[in-house]
Amino acid sequence: MSGPYVMGIDFGTESVRVGIFDLSGSPRVFASQPYHLYHPQPGWAEQQPDEWWQALVQATHTAMAESGIPKEEIVGLGTDCTSCTVLAMDEHFRPLRPAIIWMDVRAAEQARHIAASGHPALKYNGYGNVSAEWMPCKALWIKENEPEIYQKAAHIGEFVDWLTYRLTGEWTASINNVSIRWYYDRAEGGWPVEFYQQIGLGDVLAKFPQRVLDMGDVAGTLLPEVAAELGLQPGIPVAEGGADAFVAMIGLNVVQPGKLAFITGSSHLHLGQSAAPLHAKGIFGTYTDAVLPGQYTVEGGQVSTGSVVKWFKDNFCGKEAALAAERGVDIYTVLTELAEPIPPGSEGLIVLDYWQGNRTPYVDPEARGIIRGLSLKHTTGHLFRAIIEGIAYGTEHILRTFRQNGFVVEEMVAAGGPTKSALWMQIHADVSNTPITLTAVPDGPALGSAILGAVAAGLFPDVQTAAAQMVHIRQRIEPNAARHEAYRFFVDQYIATYPPLQTLMHETVRHVSAQQR
Image (cartoon, rainbow, N blue to C red):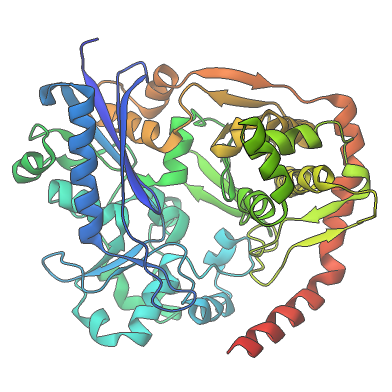
């Protein structure tokens, strides 16, 4: 099939993924290349921008070679990157230190300082704790702990800002990143200057990009020297990108109110579009114009979901692993067979999925996981099912918080590794009494980036039109009314478990932390 084609570049935590798509959204090729993640101290996480670039060059060359597509037929390019990955750069846009990536929590003290300000801008945190991941926290950490770096930094931005500059020579910011993590609100005049001044960062605003663009806008065109390095045609329009999970919303066609992008994996992210702003305790957002102009984005999240399932599989399922090897099947096949006959509620087991804390609705990094209701009857299958159910209860807790504040989800569009499990997806649908749809291309970020590239290239008039043309549904999972009714009691039990144990959790976490120092 002849072109034109568009390229989506998806920078994740551990690798870059390059996808080439036709205008129906069908992928011609995917190519990925890893890079290193460094942990110089506990709680720190850094990466080297030069390694990002080397990985991109390699992945792009691989994709072009394997696709066999002439470079002249690639007519648009879009990008997404991890959010809250912060760089400090000199006047020539050369990084002055390694990038502080999203999972880095060194700025916990700065986050507490910002939360204590009580500024109205904190409504985007749900009037609660501030995440140490967010831009102002990390920028303040650099200012207070590396003052020479901060003073030399002519530019401070995020991963996608750096990438756009490398590709085009243009210094821009994405409305997506600055809305979701920098407290920018176009409807309220843009930067909350008083807020930044109050927290001691009034001077950082001059270091931020001054051009704030919507996703899909033309940020610039591919520089000739960069095109030669990547093996692409110079002058290709490069779309303004954004944060990976939010670009995935576009790749899942969640671009109108009522739908929820349900991004699953090691953690779960819940992202939806609202026609009107709402701010409430336990909800992140809503963020003005963060995905599409004129709409507001609401966010919820669970820190540890698939990671808990993997933890259980790796540490407690030796017999099942041996059986799977003997049968020549995946261990999850064996565990699913054990879990399927067990009734909803796993005969009294309740699991809180807070292995790494709670993101929403509590925003509590010191919360921890709980398994309660154990009896001698319970088996490996019970525990496996109960963990999946506990994760589904956590999602329903978030959806209940949404509903109580006027945001109703009519459909969840899911992506990520857990979508491969029919049992897992059915439990989610049953617990929340909400249908789940799966798309033909589950790689939402790469497709979303390609859609942005298609819009920047003028192949579609807007993001909504492009998504409607390039995203296709392959399966719809309907909830079972009887099982939903059976689950209601257990969801209530799940929600009731945390409050009386919160203080005990915190005391234990702090005691163990003190012992380890």
